[in-house]
Image 1 (cartoon, helix red, strand yellow):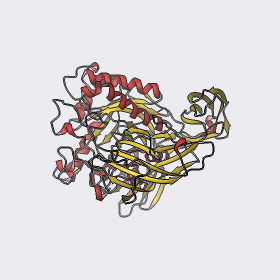
Image 2 (cartoon, helix red, strand yellow; image 1 turned 120 degrees about the vertical axis):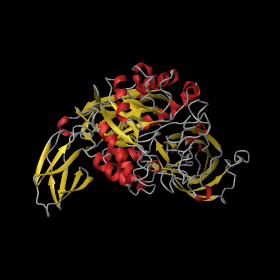
Image 3 (tube, one colour; image 1 turned 30 degrees about the horizontal axis):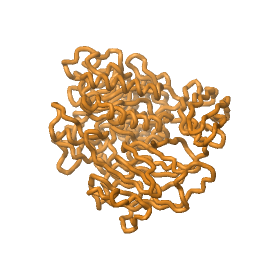
Amino acid sequence: MPVLLFGQRVKDNSLNSEWRFAADPVKVGEKEHWQDTSFAFGSFDKVQVPHCFSTDPRYFFYTGTAWYFKQFEKVAAGDEHVYLRFDAVFYKSKVWLNGVLVGTHEGGYTPFEFDVTDLLKAKNTLAVQVDNSWDTTTIPGAKTYAPYSSAAQRQVFPWINYGGITRPVHLISKPAIHISNTKIVATPDGNVRVKALIRNSGNAVASVKVNVNVLKYKFSSREVKVAAKAETIVEVSGTVPASEINLWSPDAPNLYTAVVSCNKDTVQSRIGFRKVELSGTKLLLNGEAIKMGGCNRPLDYPGYGSMDPQEVLEKDLGMIKSGGMELSRISHYPVSTALLDWADEHGLLIIEEAGNWQMTGRQMNDTGMRRKYQSQLREMMERDWNHPCVIAYSVGNEFQSQTEEGKSWVRDMSAYVKTLDDTRLITFASMLLGREELKKGEDEASQYVDFVSANIYGNHLKVLQHIHQLYPDKPVYISEFGIRTDAVKSEEERIAHLKKAMEDFRQCDYLIGASVWTFNDYFSRFPGTNPNGYRPWGLVEPDRSPRGMYIAWQEEFAPATIELVDKKIRITARKDFPAYTMKGYRLTCNGTSYTLNTLHPGESMLIDVPLAGGTANVTLIKPGGYTIMQKTLK
């Protein structure tokens, strides 16, 4: 079984860079003992890990089994244990070290690790078999028979099965008694609650002492005994004076470091003091109501596939932030820790989703599928629950949520999530909430979640009003809406569609957010894809060139309106949608910068500015330096 270690560590040795690679389309690798140390792989192709063989021109869109090989010298670990960690391998993997099978893993977006201490030698050979094929038992995968899905549709899913070792590989050295994971909850009153999972990999009972430090404050330590080859959870809590902390929010993403130590082991985790809660149909962050735009971002970039290198990620997220997309159900699958780190540092709110894309009732009822889904969900949650940017978990997308199987899935998976993390909200994305046959909330699975999420393509106001009738006490989040470029005659028609949708959204006070489908175009083999291979839903082109829709989006998703009134500029914080307090914003007009007052939703301010020929070229800039609106006023 894989083991998991989380947190920032000093003794983390990268196994990235050059590996050897070969496709194995007829699956002869194991039969021919490619995993053995005597196997000669020196003539195989050189690749750089992280590596996506689906975008490598030599194996473009290959589906099947492939192998990776790496030789490395032993890490000097002394009496420590050494763990081999993969941040992600898509989709199934088998791992051998020096000819010994150390373990297997299924799931393409979550991390896994193995204790390889006893297998290390002076010189080591690592062999990894990867399989990116899919069927009705994989997540994501094909659907079992369903009358609502065509024979072509149910065999595939709408994004590419980008195969390979798509995220970094590490060797991590830890003492025999070490911190396996931490769960840290930091709230606006300065309270910090820590759960530390302590693992004793030794052969004798061990006494351990757990300490926690935040800023200059050292919390009361806890001492426990841990049995040999066992784990235990140690809870420590303390308080940092509220006067010495600044809260975390999208416009003020203040981060602190929590240091957790246990005997010889120390782990550092970044934390943010913040509170997310619901009050009636409102979403509150640190006690203030927020309504924000967002987006869905498929992991797809020309030449990289799903690898998400730092330069692509930073460009995308910077454009997302500048586009006012602050609250996103960002993907149908777990994203990289690098994305969440950026969101922590720059202030994005993320709803994380794991796996269930349009599963059928038969699949959702299957014990094996449920167990597999829970494993991938748990791996995501345990990796990400210290990120202040993560505010909610989604337990699926567009399944038959009006059926007994769908309702049972949401009820059971929501309960499962709460056993792991009861500090975050739960939702799922429904595609059925506009159906008139749904007469009451009990007719559909959204009865079991904290807030309703809906994918709406057309008739936005009618569908939203129907949802509110079904669930009058729940906030509503639009997890998908949009229109493809090849479904209209012009970009102007797309923009008109967006503006009409926003008019509808602004009539619904219970709406807390809306994520456009999608930020970027993405490759797909799903029926109905454009002949060029892309599904062109994006605000930006595949290379991230902004379309006219992105520019229009900036203004529609800005938290303020700007107008010229009697030769003065009036800035008004929106109170319809989006709506949140504007603090620390700036306005430039004809080259002169002005600091804005703090504006709560509905509040305005006037700025007397010199006009050049009666024209004002204005730019609205949010904290962090993000330009979120540019326009010319006359």
